[in-house]
Image (cartoon, rainbow, N blue to C red):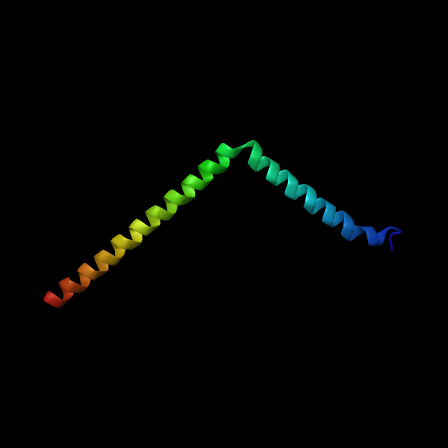
Amino acid sequence: MPRFGSLYPFVFGATLVVLAIAFHGRRKLFPEVFEEQRRLAIEGRRRAQEVQTAVAESVQKGKKDTKSN
């Protein structure tokens, strides 16, 4: 067993803290990248909602057409 085996959890925790700080700093350094990702996500959700609405309308129209036949 390593002599400093009890230090592993501390090293792991410190690594997580460093990564968290690095990613937070990246968001501050490159706000336009995150803004673009946010905009694309919003646009994607909007398109998905439009498709869902169109499919629902198509299904309703299909139900009306089958009833009239």
